[in-house]
Length: 593
Figure: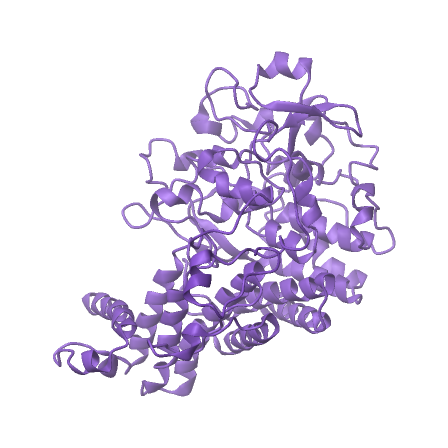
């Protein structure tokens, strides 16, 4: 154990040494200590070095790919759970979440310095490239080297793909740089070229990583199946982005997404978690502390008291709650949308929302009758829902739709601040099913057998009717999106299944559906009867022009009350001013000058 610890410290030291970029300094490094010239010998050396890369990737603020819950205080915003706040699924108003509100409303400006999840984390790439320049020095079989090369290239490809989703062109660097490297003052690599390099990295990773590292997913290293899911996710993004924004290679990327997801579905060791209990199986494993052995969870981040902890549960109310738009996207139990189903009971009475609906709704949003079941807000015994401004304490929301999907009172009760251990699910098998269905549908090659292999397996878990090729419902709310009813339903399934798992914002970007961010963010039905039942609220209200009914209007009276989305610039984030000043060859993204 001491030797492993020493090696890990040495690997971290090598990152610092490699940053010095001074050959004379390296030559004078003490001969009785491990140096870059003596380190890269055994397979254990390569494993230890890659352990240091795993340590760097825990910094979700700089490297937002293996998103978990950032350690310590910053877990209150830098968590995979809160990424949907950039989009239309959630409705935060907490001051510490202003950046989410600002970007959601299209009111963000060119920053002076890189912001959270933004134009930063380049030291991570440097660390990867240091390894890639040295792995081959080890005197071990090539197959053993390839495992660690593949691990590093998976991280590099994933990192750059994430940067492309936000900034388009990126400074793609494939070697260790020094102070004289011309790449330091080069222009950004064009998106097409960068994504070709990303695909090469992900292909290598999905071919050379082992199927199993022998760690029992407790949790462990990313394996080949994880690489396939990352590749499928990245390829689906690029394929649909090119299709809807204009590009010449959309079909190629979609075909790669299809192939990667299909290989995982057909040959991988994963399956949906299901015990035959549709009223609980969807969220049952989202609010437990140990996911070891779960058949659906492919990659997750573990937290342990005294080692690595968070406080995401304590700050759950920062999410604001689910939006009305989100709640209304759950189908009725007959498989029809609320706009056409005779089973929909309306929302005049809060509990009616849950009647005859997809069971995932009640496993995502708190039903008043379930407060005791979930020991909501530490089993405080209060009546829910509660809105901001309600008297009597308790956990408050901005919408009335308390999120219950990940809630775990046992990770709160009796625990001090920042000692919680709620895990973060990073990759799960359900996403592969959704990617496969969407890629096939976008290619125009989907069949009923494909739906049965993918979407309908998700519906089987919650006892919902199958999606049938000859009987696709048409939701009038989505007829103006310029897509087929089938694609609309697959997108709806993705939104419902993957709620609060960090995908909604990038989905809207790739689908060119930024207009959805201009719709006011609404909450629960609000009238005299609701006020009499739940008490007065400080939240504003507005009348829905279509129904004539009054609802909570989350951002009324705030700076975010009238959201905008500029189609000419808001699909990309702006480059920080200090980056432009340091390298004149880097140009600002369109519309941000």
